[in-house]
Image (cartoon, rainbow over all chains, first blue to last red; front, side):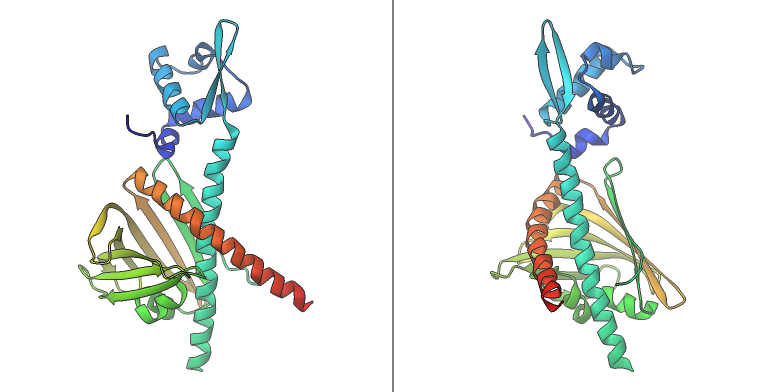
Amino acid sequence: MMRRDIFQAIADPTRRAIITLVALQAMTPNAIAENFHTTRQSISKHLRILTECELVKQEQQGREIYYSLEIEKMKEIDKWIEQFRKIWETRFNQLDKVLSTIKKQKK
Amino acid sequence: MNNLLFDFIVDKATKTVSITREFDAELPLVWDAFTKKEILDQWWAPKPYASKTKVLDFKVGGRRFYAMVSPEGQERWVIQKYTSISPKTNFKFFNAFADENENPELPGSEWDHTFSEQNGTTKVSMVIYNESLERMEKQIEMGFKEGFTMTLNYLDELLKTLSKK
C-alpha cells in the first residue's frame, strides 16, 4: 500500500475537524460521528487514514475503542513549518545585506 | 534591527506557502536581486550553503538552472522555468529539482512573485503552490537538513554578538 501522506491527511476539512475534537478528549468513533452529518462508514474511513498517518492513536477501554491525538506528530508539522520559515528568514536577511551593499556602491 | 514586514503562512488545505517581505530598497534594485544571477547567488542559499547559477535566461520560456552547494561540495540542482513576466511587477516560474543534466524530477511547484513599492520600501509577495503533496514532503526533508545547519549558524552569530558585549 502507498504510504500515507501527512499533508493529505490534514488537507481534508472533516479530518481537521476530527483532529480538533480528539485533541480535547479521547473519543469513540460513535461519539465522533455524532458531530458530523455524514455516515459512520465515512468517519471510520477518515479515522483509518488519520491512524495510518499516526496523527491519532487508538486505545481499547473495555469494549470500546477510543481515539486520541498524537501530539508529538502534530508538533513535527509545526517544527517543519518553523524550519522552513527560518530558511526564508535567513535568505531575506542575506538579501538585506546585499541590497544595502549595492546601494552604498551606487552612491 | 528593522521593522520590515515578514509574513510566512503555510496553508495545508490549499497546498500553498505564502511569503511576504519588505525590503529597504527601491523596486528596480529588488527586482534585479530576484532576476539577475550575479545578485541571486549572493543571497539565495542560506549559509553555509552556496548558490551556483549555471544558466539564467530571464524571459518567458527561459530558465534559471542552479545548484545549492553544501559546505562538503554536494550539489542539489534545481530548474526554474519562467512562465510569465510582467517587468517590475510580477513573474512566475515552475520550480523542479533536477539532475546535473537538467532532467527535471517532476512534479514541481509553481512560484508567483509580486513586487510593489511605497516610499522607498519594496514589498515582495510570493505564493508557492505545490501540485504534489509528496513533493512538499521532500521539501520537509530538505528543510530539516538546511534548517538544522542554519540553526547552528545562528548560534555562531549569536555567540559573536554576545562576546562583543
